[in-house]
Length: 456
Picture 1 (cartoon, rainbow, N blue to C red):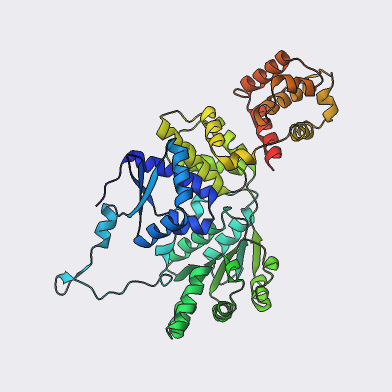
Picture 2: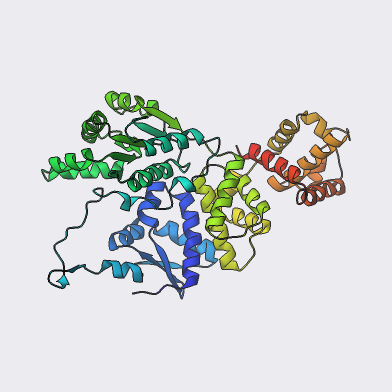
């Protein structure tokens, strides 16, 4: 057994947080998810992998990306070495089971097929109780819950679609967990696994085994149906599997990264079957939902983080939930590594250290003025003018604050833009907003919502 060092684990946790934003979800889930930081010694960082195949693939395909990310986090050059690693629990699990009839290790039990098992492949974290419901996903959540409680009765098939990282796979696993706990059989598979299993069955002359495996399940959960596009032979197998399950009132739940109508090259007869049930989309989470997700994630991690820090993070990361959680993981890892408190300054530093985020949050001065004017329902000309009523003065100070925070403008340039104010007036306005938002919940929410305009 190879021991790991706490520092290496923390560094690798931060590295994974960044890599999660830079690679596709299938790549992350396949090659990176099961890895662990083992040690950092003399300019070399050792990464543990679950098997030799993963080590080889990371070495060949992701070495440069991983090395650069480690160097960016550790602030120093580092070679990377991948090696197979198992902790004590995994080593115990790897021991051959004892044959109770002879007292000798058993070697006759065959390994289970990749998709010929049920709840063991489900992520135990992806349950209905851990799914944060908001306006963007409430219909999908309700439909998934209804299907889980009454499989094969309503909404069959159920198709959930969204951009990456918005929760469709979470709901798919939650359905699986619920039906499994109710004693029903299920098969969960990605479309890639379904394809590989089908091709292997044809090649080995075991198509009947394939048919029995998939068509005897009470529930079929199939992730990422879009990967059937262009695979005519697999589409044929899927079509007949779908028909057999549907005719016997077995539940089918499918996810996609786009609407069924956009799966242009998918066979028409398959598209027709999919649209015969319920098709539901999941939108990007609004600010309130993002804050609820961050709060729940912090509680799961047993962290006591200032709400203003979560609000700041939630206002800056809005594309998807995976990016949101990855940013929180990265923030926590940075705090552990640098022994600093998790505060607004650290959020700004972590955001600045991430090249993708840094590029994504560049906004123009006109965008800030438009966002402030729309939120406060006044003309941009009023912000640049000399009116000094309470509403206009407050909006102008918010504009000053956001121009300094979100653009590269200095106080003199901001003053010139807002009607010729001098830099001391701008500094006063920025400090006023900075101090008041710490005690004024409404002002803080106003700024968060305006920032949301800027990032959308």
